[in-house]
Figure 1 (cartoon, rainbow, N blue to C red):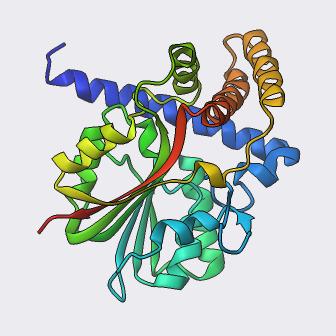
Figure 2: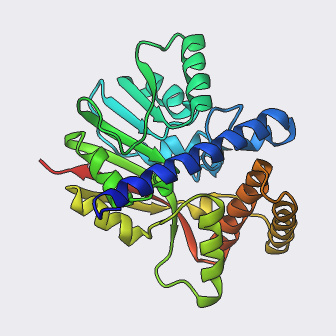
Length: 292
């Protein structure tokens, strides 16, 4: 294997790993209606439920208002949702800020549902969805790139940011929201961080500094950084620990079956939640502006 081929092979392997991950999670929420209110399946969003500090409203769409607060966009922006999932972000924001939207996902199941929902809502013209990697070349330029809890799955975060930023118009904005470990976490929590990364299929998971460096290399100036961790509801530590141990056992007994992905995903999410309470993980927003 040549040095030049290694990053490509790593991205291909990670792509297949995350596709399989989302395929099994989609099956699980379809089968189990008990988890659907928290899964994002019914709301078409997969990101965290935040509490609006101004209104007290809690829900999956609060993040959209908070992350775009203070952003000056064209009257009809060209928007890319990189890792769009079921399309919930586009369906919520396009009627509010207008423009032409492109959502990209690697999941055939997510693509099918997003397109069906666009048709149901009569939004096929302003909102398109395609199945492609966020590391693949794109056509045209965008005024706004949104990436919510998707970049964390990249095998090469700096390369992914560079690819997307190359399609951002001068003065355009890159909005990134993701889980970010703190710099120099306590030694006793490093194992939990590594396990959370494995369970959520996140090979790198940069810190805020790591993302800032990727932004700078892609000609993006950070104009806003905000930690939303305090706006996310967290369960008591003993409850989280008990649930983590339960799902670790379930993943072990499911062995090599695909079903083990479900308890593994639960473990990953619970570890991130516990790490946030312990001060080792942040749910953070970064906004970058493309240099002229």
